[in-house]
Every structure is written in structure tokens, then in C-alpha cells.
Image 1 (cartoon, rainbow, N blue to C red):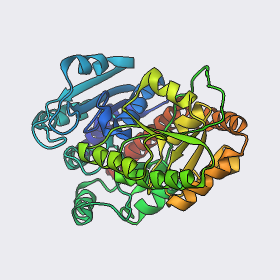
Image 2: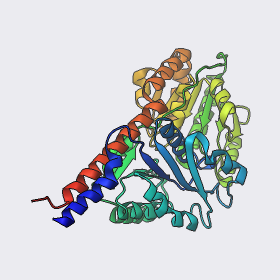
Image 3: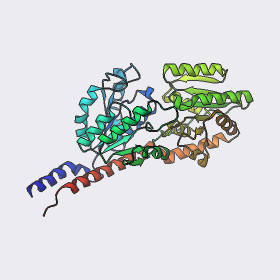
Image 4: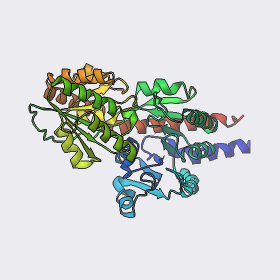
Length: 414
């Protein structure tokens, strides 16, 4: 009897913070990379935006991450200081000692930070923090949301498939049976369910910033195409360049292509050689990394943004382009088939011929009207405020379920 009463008292003291929507939810985000390590593409951007908008929505948010900023590089002190206490989010940058995200400092801080949290939110998949975070959350009985950012998806060019399969088996073995996977599209969910059949899957899309005002450059005689994103073979850029060569041989439409982003030195050099080989030097420009106002100006000067990826869990660039009033051509490897239903773009296969045909087709379509439709769609369904509210609702549901399970496990008083 006394033991049961003590158990109930312990649960009540520990979980009183779970009751009621008025209580501030404390969320610990664990991620190998974080702002401003933009060289890692969409992962640090999504983790940063979720953290800041969750804080704005009323959650208490901490981030545990590393100072990694690409192979052999670290964020400098000024860069980290600019984000360490930004938008109400407390960020701890731990020193990376090996590879992309191996950090003994992060490992040492994990248990203490997790004791502070109500909910743990893990980002990425095949990185150093993943398995320790899964283990610690299970040991401390903390609800855990895991966002793999598309890493669990495969395509024909996927590398180290055997290693990744083994890694996934270890994750399944060490994770809590109540593991929740946060995915961003039905396509990502369909592929992930096969690898994690017992996990709870929740679909919440990434959000997109909607500019209050736009200053779109009027369309001219030349069709202005754009690609924005990490430069990687998975993105289908070489197929887009081959499509541009087809268009040049057809001599219609008159076009230009701006490629914004960065990747490995070897792959960037390969793309430049391909541009030269295809004799596209007059049509294609590589801009390097762009952010902030420079990125907004590029979207405003672009008629059609092309996302020719082989596979994507979300493809944030499509949402960004639509939010800035540009039409899009998305590959069927992205989860953006609805652009045709909404009337703001085309969704086609990413082989060169299909891309070339789509570019020719969209050239004669009402691009300004399509961009406006896309912008309204993003504001209605993909604002960060909406996504943050859905994520907080998920956290509170998991906390309630966790509390109910612990109460059910306590012997009933007689």
C-alpha cells in the first residue's frame, strides 16, 4: 500500500507539468548541425525554423548541437553567438572532434539537458548524436520525436546502403517502443513504414516564410529558370543541364538558368565541366550560396524554379519559390504532385526529355497567375505558424500518453 501511494505521488509530482494546455512545454532539440551551418542544406534550416517558431508559439526551446560547418571546418565564435540566444531559443554548440558530428562534449551534456526537457526532438539519421539520443530518451522515459529529414529514403544512387540498413536495425533495437517519427509527406511515410514498421508516424510538413511584400521583376522575352539547393547528385542537376542542351538545340524557348547553392568541391567542378561540355556557358550561371535578401531577389527575378531531384522528403525550395510568386516544375521524386491540381506548376519525370518538354510547355502558360495561386496556397497550408502549432499539439499528445502509460503501470490501490 505505501509503495503504491509513493508511486502515485512520484508520478503526480513528475507529471503535473503534463496537465493542461497552459503549461509551457519544454523541448530539447538534438541535431548534428544547426544555424548558421547552412552548408548542410535543408536540415539546419528546418531545425532552426522549427525551433524559433516553436518558441514564438509558447514552447521553451533548447538546442543541443555541434559547431560543425562542413568537412574540416567549424563555426566561428561570432557566428555561434548570433544564434545562441536568438528568438528565445537557447543553443549550446558543442565542439566537434571527428568526422561530421562526433562530439564528446555533446555526449556529456545530453543526459543533463534531457532531464530539463519534457520532450526530446531528434534531427537527422546517420549521425553521431542519433543512437545516444535514442538510448538516453528511453532510459529517462522522455517522449521522443525523430525527424530524419528524408535521410531514410533511397534512390538508385544512394550510397552505403548496407551500412545504413545496419544502422537502422541498431536504432530500432535501442529506441523506445513508443518512438514517433515525424515525416513531412505521404511519399516519405510510405517508404519509411517499411523500415520502421512499429513506429508511430506523424505527418507535419515543413513550413515556409511568406514575404509580406514582393517586388517581382516583370517577365521578359527570355524564360528565366532557377535552381536553388544543395549541389548533390541526388538533386538531378545533371539531368536539368541535359534538358537545357535539348532546349538549345530546339532553339525555343529562349532561356537562362541560374544555379544557386554549393556542394563538394569535386561535384561543383564536375557540374562546371558538364556546362562547358554541353556548350551552355552563355545560358547557365552558377551563383554559389545565396541567403536572405539575395535569395529573395533571385526568386523575384525567376519565372520558373525547377526541382529535378530523384527523391525528396519535402523539397523546401518548391515551397519557397511558390511563396515568392514563382511557378515551379517539380519532379515526381518530390512530394509536390499537387502543384498541377492547384495550378501553380508542373510535376514530371526528371529525365532530360521530360524536363525539356515541361519547360517548353510552361513557357506558354500564365506564369504570373500561377505564381499568385501558389503564394496563396503556401500562406493557407504551409506557414511556419501552422506547422509549429501542429508540432506543439503532437508534443502535448505524447506527454499525455506517456503519463497515462506510467499511471497504468502503477499497482491499483485496494
